[in-house]
Image (cartoon, rainbow, N blue to C red; front, side, top):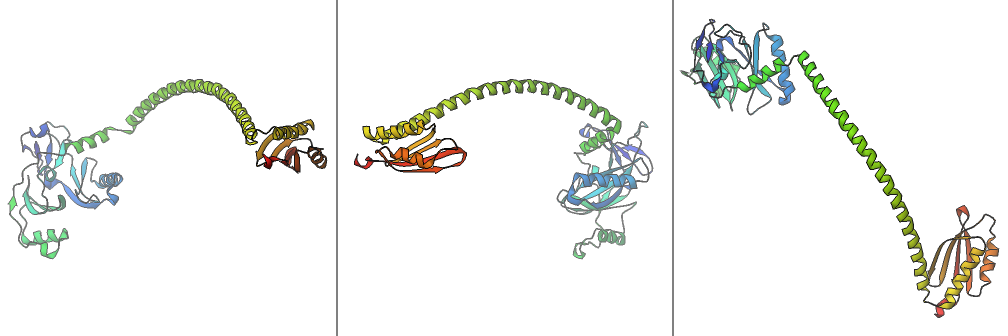
Length: 342
């Protein structure tokens, strides 16, 4: 890895075999750090913070990276640093090639420390794996500078150390966040023009495929509709035959309830015969305990009194009543004489 110092010098700071990443570590002296809040900790909040950092940057060549706190996703540290030139003179402004020095060193869990940097010294305050305060000095801070830094971190009085801790050498990380840089690089490559071209190509392919599928399923649906119509007609005929069979069964059951008496059968037959003789269509017949119910359909000019007299002319039928319904429907109730004697 190459270290970018505050005086513009580039020097090798570690073997490039670390994850085989050819990265530039930017001196803490060149980096800015601030704590920001992220409403709901959402991706949109992260994008908004990065866009704001880009607008606030002193030049277009400035880079930025946001690191959310591991425990509190609504808080984060925002890093900014200038783009640097690699050893061969090429611009190394992409996040996959450039890191703030602090992010390249081993983090703390919780506590305070002074870290020896490529240039100068950095004071750090950590809480549950998140860096909540950072400040750089060209030399180790004096007591007053250290206390002011801790107060800016909003620490409680009993948590403030009067004397600065000793400056320590912190090793480099073995898991540099190269993948976040690769993601940022990929996002930078997706320009509006490329997005339109790719979207158009994908949309065209989707439309072609959807059209072919639509034609296939339309033909299949048409075939199924034809089969359903044929089967529906067949089922309709079967249901009609079934209904007729059920009506015949009901008539048979009614006749069985009469106990097989020849006189009762003749009486019922005589009653039905007289009704049919008056051009009346029999719709329903039932027999319960000698009580006969017949529903017929006739003409508007049917004489109810005459119909009662006609039916009661048969001695086997008595207590006849006629009730006219809608649509020329007539309900006839009668008692079969002699039923109780069976």
